[in-house]
Amino acid sequence: MSKFKKKKGGDLPAVNTASLPDIVFMLLFFFMVATVMREDTLMIENRLPSADQIEKLEKKNLVMYIYVGKPSSQYKAKYGDEARIQLNDKFAEVSDIAAFISAERASKREEEIPYLTTSLRVDKEANMGIVGDIKQELRKVNALKINYTTTQGDVSNNE
Amino acid sequence: MAKRAAPEVNAGSMADIAFLLLIFFLVTTTMEKDSGISRKLPPMEESEEDVVIKQKNIFTVLLNGKDQLLVEDELMELKDLRAAAIEFLDNGGSTDNDGNPCDYCQGKKDPASSDHPDKAIISLKNERETSYKRYISVQNELVGAYNDLRNRRALQVGPQRGFRDMNFVEMQKNYKDVNWPGNKEKLKEVIDQIKKEYPQKLSEVQ
Image (cartoon, rainbow over all chains, first blue to last red; front, side, top):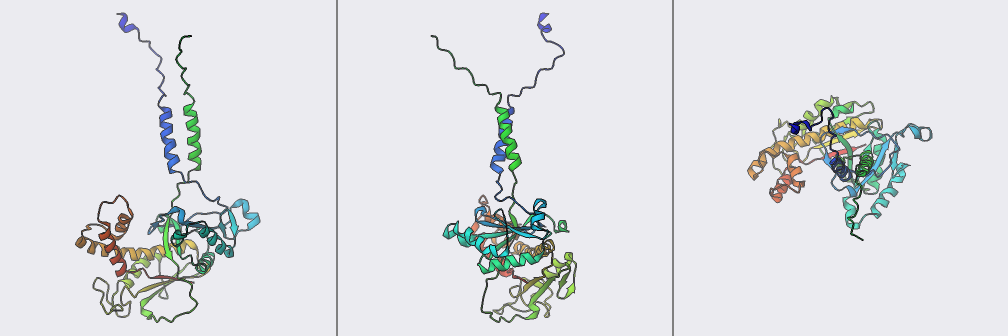
């Protein structure tokens, strides 16, 4: 009956981890594909308001971003507590928008220029004053397509 | 010398390397969502032409510096705004510029309210102190009013053109969807027709 005695009692066999790299690679590829590298480092607080009647912005490379919000804590001492505009990693004034738009336009092909959209990523605690100034400035340079970028959600989340 | 089999590369650290990369991508991922309320700003015009618009065709929504909502000079709660806007847009009291009555409107046909959806304008005013979140909420409700009307119209028009059980928002989504199997040219016609019947005339003034 030695046939049955060969089994050693007690010890659990080790779990086979040979497929672990495969699983990890699968996850890795998912994240590599889904990742969008942040273009700008935000120096401001930027919590977008929520809305539910929204449309998707189609062509990502034809979007110009204007960020508005209070300076984040490490910049508070230098830039104060009021909502500020950020363009391309830098704080900016309303008067800088025209130059920003023309720089963005210059970097695009000519036939794409009419499709450029300005995405206003404004913190929900900001006031309309600064947004109105931006809109006025955009009208001056004839960048009329804008998008109030929001998150998907009910408007009651805004309060 | 006898031919020796090449030694196998040790793949034991493969998982570690993959983990390292995985953690890097996990940390840098932001999953950015770019969606929002799209608007078109009015062009800058030096010469102010005097377009006479009848007062009854303008629906004024004012959001003052204390975030109070004044609709046609009366205080209103945000939740009632959409219904009020729909009532105004869908009134159809008279005819459009070409003299056609609004036969698809289901409003009260009140002569004191808007003539035709084609003429009805919503004017959204704000003050400098108005908060952005409140402004977006109001914008959302007004866009919602247009979308509700267009959805209703889409459910009426759609079945006649072979697009059953599809509201306006879904039509637009399908139109943009590359994988959608239906007839896009026909769908575009329906979308354009509905857009023409309920044009989004929302003006933002300061």
